[in-house]
Length: 308
Image 1 (spheres, rainbow, N blue to C red):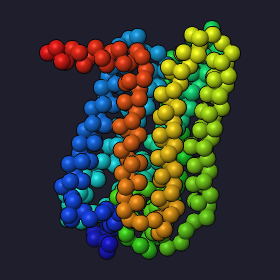
Image 2 (image 1 turned 120 degrees about the vertical axis):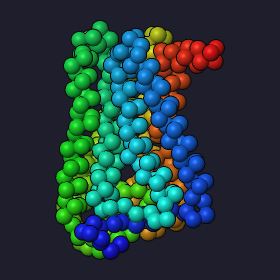
Image 3 (image 1 turned 90 degrees about the vertical axis):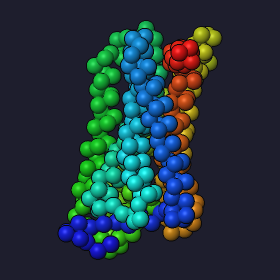
């Protein structure tokens, strides 16, 4: 769009028949957002309130749930405003900030899952050393690094993007992601390589570490008694389900960005909605139902509410 008062606007052109279905989209996505916030915050509060859940594994789960709420808050409020607006526009600076937060929080998700895998490895493979290794200080350091490292790395392309000149002011999406790079007059090879390095560091490398860690856990569990196998199945399976779900969503994002001109608008729209809905809704359900201690407190809370 033309600039007004030195402000550059980007048109978000990924919406599908928004004039016809705007209120359907709004109600559907608003309901999803409320469910995401309520389900994640419920399990998060249970972990904070109950002292028997103040163990490293549950602390990492609480961090992951908070990450899901942050992830949704980056996308949903602007998306809801767009559904009921005549024009789906966003300032270029806000677009870059949304893209920065989107990928920073996504990178944190993988690092938190890697930290959880390390915690499960120590718990099952080195149970006697677990209290010594997984102290409160180490857990705090892992949490801080999980959020800080992606945020610092992504600051570089965000600043560089702000310096590049735009030749197109239409973004083929419903929120800002790395596809904004196609709007520049000249593409930066250095930024492209840097993006691949970040993709490797914050998704592929943590994924390989997680899979390797759980492979070792499975081997140790198979060689041990029934109690160890049961513990491994109860605590590791939810993490693997979440990893599988989030890995699929990352693949969706890469496909949408790289094949933007080759896939239909309908397919792109549906895949984008899956990216922003599945993981935030999936995480509290998996951890609330599959983690025994959390499920006990959740069941007690629901029974208490029903009694009232």
